[in-house]
Amino acid sequence: MFVQRGSSRSRVALAGALSVGLVFGLSACGDSDDDTGADTGASAAAIDCSPYTAFGDLKGKTVTIYTGIVTPEDTPHKESYVPFEKCTGVTVKYEGDKAFETQILVRAEAGNPPDIAYVPQPGLLQNLVKTGKAVEAPPEVAANVDKFWGPDWKAYGTVDGKFYAAPLGANVKSLVWYSPKEFADKGYQIPTTLDELKALSDKIVADGGKPWCAGIASGEATGWPVTDWMEDFMLRLSGAEAYDKWVKHEIPFNGPEATQALDGVGAYLKNDQYVNGGLGDIKSIASTTFQDAGLPILEGQCSLHRQASFYAANFPAGTKVAKDGDVYAFYLPGKDATSKPVLGGGEFVLAFSDRPEVKAFQTYLSSDVWANTKAKLSSGWVSANKGLDPANLTNPIDQLSASILQDPNAQFRFDGSDMMPGAVGANSFWKQATAWIIGQDTKTTLDNIEKSWPK
Image (cartoon, rainbow, N blue to C red; front, side, top):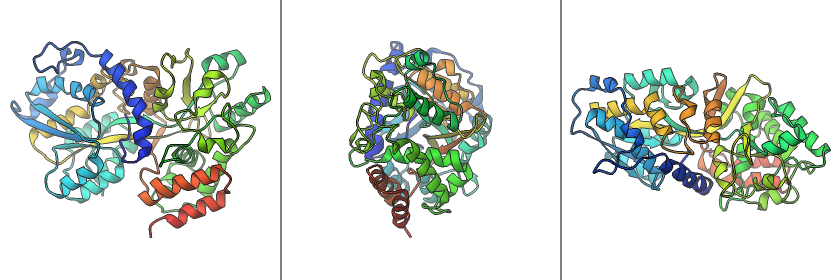
């Protein structure tokens, strides 16, 4: 799924992806045969209702959901609840709000929270728990998470040693876009290590091409794509433990690990032999919008573009995104072929009530049954739920993302800037990354971000 963050970064980045998801989602739905208009192909499929009998007679009960996922992207979500409603007699009331991230705290602190909130960042989840209004997840949900997710995911839903929130959807940022036809015609192989990625880049240069294209312009959020690059390289070069410490500022932002990571990114983005295919010189990266940055792949002007799964929506209508299509993506490799660090985002299901009907619905949302129901209803959505059958996903990029998330060696980490204080993650990090692209050195860049960290 996606991270619904209040910044212009995510609003702009995800708008196209979500609209594409709507198209695929609607095509997956059948006509309504119910006077509520909510029945779909998914709701017609029978599911096992026995997991919900333990919660008692729930007929006539209501569960409220509050989320930042709004019209029209909310349609597949609402449709995915119908099997649960038919099993239990519960009515699920859905409220989407673009101001969710500020209003959910206001509502919780005022004692007027919803039954369930879809929380898009671990930091916000922690703040909501601190209000004292959130409740721990029931044992049935904890059991589902232990069964269907890795410990990294459960840790993000845990606060002060207590488990509160099961994961819901996810997105993958550790992808490199490419042209399958070019790779086939020129004999290029998908790299499985960082060394192989560097060798591939050098091979493309030797063949007379510019391997990489990039763009970081995004209005007030200009610079954010560099932060994703750097976070990916922090994970790959220093490991998940160091990444976690860096995000929490337990090691300095300008320490040796961060220096190695940004210099690693610079070996690509500040290499005039490598960039900026079809768009200009190195400095053109700063003035090229992130939406346009990968399009030169279609013209053969560059071969590689590092960007998240949602980037699929930015290719022109009619572009075939598939292994045998006009464009596709591969996993940004780790140091070696066995390590699988994954950068991304997602949401968590946090409850503010322990009524039986709420616990039953939490159990449904944490199940493999819900994940597969939701998958059949919408494109542009994926989950790290290991019970999700990738065959139920409706497009190849979703299937690729699921295979990455479900890899037993995957070490998933949330986007670091989304978890840093706003003065850093949504301000100095972006601005200094932009200055770095147009010529500022690594040391000055990292020193300036370190100085901006709130005392």
